[in-house]
Image: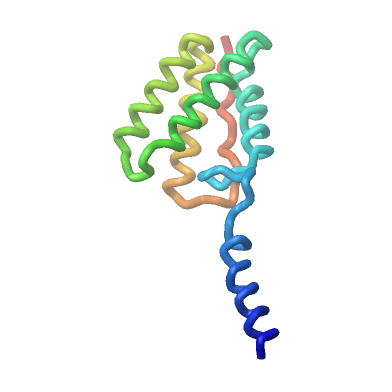
Length: 130
């Protein structure tokens, strides 16, 4: 009897620990590796120069942390943060790269609104001939 009681108590105390998500997953459900892959993909999509990559990554990490701190229901806060991100990126990227960034992020938002989770990312915008 005592043995069964101890086993039941141990099992019940272990359940909350098993239900916790791994520490390397953020609030959006992305692992650190997925975030790294996303940043690398954005580097290719935007055709960043070597001198732009570090600055781009710093801005995106800073803005990602700010976005995680926001209330998920506040559309206005997210919109203001997006505008702030564009403003910061405009100091690092050229006009064509900023346009591609906005087109890409718009594609992500449209996919989320549709609930299309089958694709990992929208198709990158076609390079604009200069």
